[in-house]
Image (tube, rainbow, N blue to C red; front, side, top):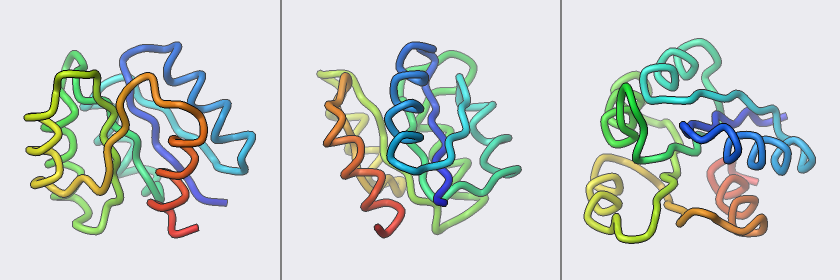
Length: 119
């Protein structure tokens, strides 16, 4: 069962995405900021990460760079609000494999995670 780390400071978004992925057969780990995401990544070594860009403590772009430093093969998709195209470009340069505009519909989330996990 592939493991997915969901990182978002909005509890509602974490819960909604977790429920969707668990129903689709994924094991889900949650983090509410970039610092927690790095710690959970080290502990769990998930198959995929859904990483919000704008968060307290540590933003998603910084967390992405830290996760890629831990594991160059980390498979990360960024979650972004509209109007953050410049940050998305930076994230892709830093190693993000995909990005989703929030709120992403269920099919788009499932397709992105399946692609990250090689399903």
